Length: 90
Image (cartoon, rainbow, N blue to C red; front, side):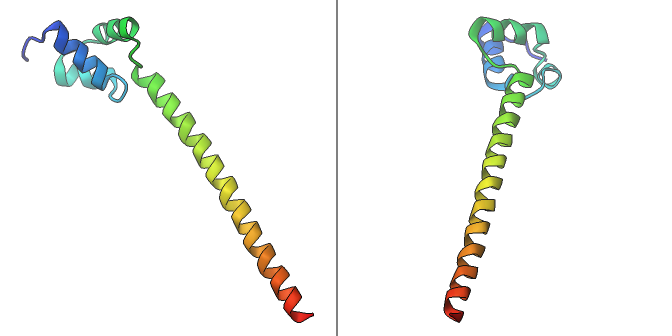
């Protein structure tokens, strides 16, 4: 494995830490968790678990909003159709 500079390690932490687990970064680039942790604290880079938790929460909220929207659309369509059928029979 090649010897990385501090700048390269920072770049790896900045670009990969939020998206790739530390063990994979270690295996691929030889950058240990302690280095990722250092750069995360120093530069405010999100760690993998924190980023994944935030993304999952955001997707959950979007999913719930989508379900609510589809429910309301479905109800409106059915109510309108039934109202139109009732009005056309009269």
